[in-house]
Image (tube, rainbow, N blue to C red; front, side):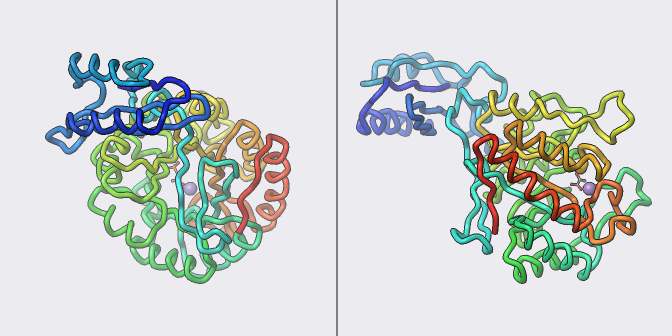
Length: 359
Ligand code: PEP
Ligand code: MN
C-alpha cells in the first residue's frame, strides 16, 4: 500500500503519518520526489521474518490514513513485486559502496554517474588477479570482479579457488583501493563471503534459489542480482522482492543476456530490459556484456549500447591472457582492449548526459 501526500505537504504532516503507521505496527518508507511525497507502507512481520505488504492492512486503517492531514489518497500497489516497484518507491534507489580509491571514499550506484566493475571471470592465481586489478584500476574501474565460487555447467569445469580466492580479492582491494564483487552460491557461505567482499553477486543460475535470496536479504551488503537466463522481467523483479522483503534494500539488478533460439551469441543481451526496469522499478541496473554475448569482440558494442540505454554500470571480464583463462576466455577482454573501451564508454555516457565514476 502507498500513501500519496498532497503537493507541498509539511514535514509535520509526513511525521504524523509515520507516527500513525508506527503506532499501528506498520512501517512507512518515505520517498520524497520533486513533485510528490509518497510513503510506502509495510505490514506486520510474519512468522518467517518477512513483512507483509499492502494485502494484510485492514480497511479501517486505510480509511483513517485517508483522513490524516495532507493525505491525498491511499492506493494499493498493483504489481506483484511491491517493494521493488516504482509505485511503492518513485525515486531512484542509490546503492552506496565504500571504495577506497575514489576521493569521496564511496561510489553511488544508480546515481548520475556510470560505474565500471571489471576483472577476471574467475580468480585463478595471485599474479593473474593482481595484474588485472592494477590494469583495470589504472584505466578507471572502481570495482574489481572475480569469482571464487564458480557455478559450472559441467562438474568437470573449474569451480574456483573458494576461500583462497576471496583472500586474494581482499589482498587486491588492500593494494589497489578497489571495492570487490564476487559470487556467493549457497546460503551457508553468505556470512563468510561477506567477511571479504563489498558486493555479493547472485549468479544467473541462482536467481531462483529462494533460500539464498532470503539469506542475502538478511545482511546489509549490496547484492547484484543477475537475471536468470530464462527469467522474465517480472520473475526477476520477484526475485529482487525476496531480498528486499527480508530487509536488505541494497539491491542492484544485472542484465546478463537471456536464452533465445539464437546461436551466434552465447546469450541474447536484452538491452530493452534496461529502460523497462527503469520504468517498473526504482532499483539500479547494471549490464554484463561478457556473459551477455560470449564473444570479446561484442563486449565493446554491447557496453556502449547499454550505456546509451541507461545502464548504471558495467560488469566486464578482463584477463591478462584470455587464451589461457581457465574460464570464459573467449568473452574476456585483453588489458589493451579494456584500455580502449574506457574512453569510448565515457563518450557515450557524456552523450546521454551522464558522467563516469573514476578512481
Ligand atoms: C560470471 O559473472 O562469471 C557468471 C558466472 O555470471 P552468470 O551467473 O551471469 O552466468
Ligand atoms: Mn564468467
